[in-house]
Image (tube, rainbow over all chains, first blue to last red; front, side):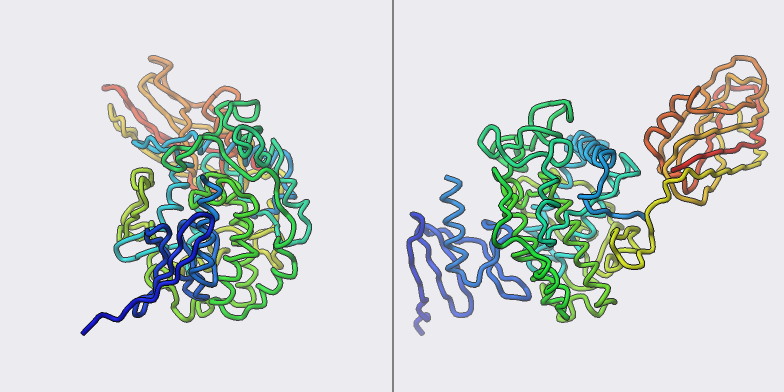
Length: 75
Length: 440
């Protein structure tokens, strides 16, 4: 049986290629083809990442853009 | 019991004591470690973010244990400060009043130092926390490369952004009326509260190594204070994490890393070698820290605070013991006798008197140990063949007693006298000894 195809949303932000990959039951954030460590607030479900400490976002897309913003400032 | 005060109300002397204690921790090392006590505290914070073992992921953020974990973390940090200066307590930054002057007043050279300006434009360039040695801090304040890989100077934004999005009295009030912990906790942790303040101070406060900036602890003291306020209206264990969210490490009776008996380990890169060592029996669960009064502190504006401001009037305490114990001949371990002092206050004067019968005074070594474990040598094998040691010792003639006073040792607790005979043949006994203490 063929594997269920993943849904991938791609966007460019601050020179970074952001991908939101939807698997069967999970989501994955990639920036420039590398998976970003993410988790969700246990109570609110907000998306968080060690790459963007002290911030929480309503979607992986917002989180990905924030990380790209941080990388832009760091560069 | 001690009182945590609003940082805006600290006296100049209280600021000096706080900042000097912080600087001492930065340059103080535990036995066998080349990582300062302060930097060990810093390392714990990025360490808890990436755990493996019984716990996985983040053991202190974005889930229920955010508040109890940081309460325990602050308590241990405050205890470390008090080991340096027993008069120091951790102040809180009262953001959320809508009066930013309370916050901006912190950023002065003789307090937490300015926002960023020098070097990269973000470096804290003057005061106790400046990289370069100066009149406030002759040793300077530098950040270990493992705890931040770029540069050594502490960094903050160039200005404190207190505009839109700053916590307000209304936002804090709205938090306090949240009826459920699983609503209150994220409301306090996320913007416009805890997270926002990290962002507005910026620089090192943006990273998981944010305790590199000592203002971290004052910020989290306010977080803890708001939780304590909420707990007044929502008392008891039932109001902690009733849905059990957050998994292992976040539930009421889970062990919290690193006080978990080794159940979990950090996978944070470069952090493992910087951590302090905890005994396998040093275990803390959220349930252990829900009652902050039981942990020994309260906040200065709590209604009915059970620990009112420390009486600044001097108090006098006296204790006496008559052990009448023989002193074993040629035995460096010697004998010990105790006097328990009931009371509180920082030592301002001390007189210790001993009555020892002995046939060769030069055999004797006599040491007084304060309740916090600090030793004060009273007599060290002087006096040759003279008999007996019957005299009193004061800070004027005994440097170690002067050190106890200078350190403001807490008077309450068990004082111990150790008497030993360090040569053969002559013998004697400890008849009695006494302590006269003054405290403020």
